Amino acid sequence: MASFQVEVRVSPRADLLDPQGKAVEQALKRLGFAGASSVRVGKLITLTLEAPSREEAHRLVEEMCAKLLANPVTEDYSFEVAPLPAPAAREG
Amino acid sequence: MASFQVEVRVSPRADLLDPQGKAVEQALKRLGFAGASSVRVGKLITLTLEAPSREEAHRLVEEMCAKLLANPVTEDYSFEVAPLPAPAAREG
Image 1 (tube, each protein chain N blue to C red):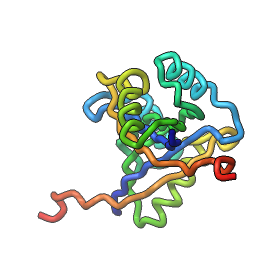
Image 2 (image 1 turned 135 degrees about the horizontal axis):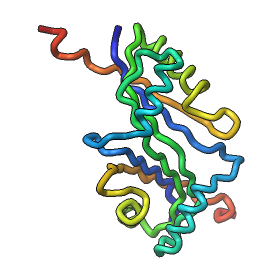
Image 3 (image 1 turned 120 degrees about the vertical axis):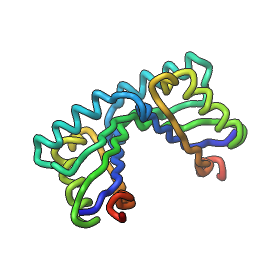
Image 4 (image 1 turned 135 degrees about the vertical axis):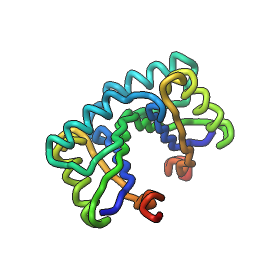
């Protein structure tokens, strides 16, 4: 088993309204940030994953996104999987 | 004025509890993803920003984060500012 650092980015689909993004945009404008537009608010999910290989880690994260982390009707997602160094204790 | 694509990443501070991350972690484990741990849920905010220069865009985003996008007591943030190509209409 190896450890992987996983980062999942979940965003509202480009063709859908994003009420939270709209609210943030209006708040920014009220604060004087007149040049801000197209604000969208998504989720950034980070986790550590134990898996036998990077390929298997990818497969597991894809399944997590489809089953839980993203709503396939309203959200797009992408993710990155990076190997973590083995714990130092294992080398002793 | 130039246009910039801005991406702001807001995460719960490492030394604080993250109830949303804990809930996602428990849901993942219930779904059979036993190898998932250290789940944290943050925000990913994207926006377009008009600014006279990249330096000024950086300054504005820093101010947005401090004033609205992140809670400095409970959250850490980082951001990237990338120039957007000028609209094609301007070249006509």
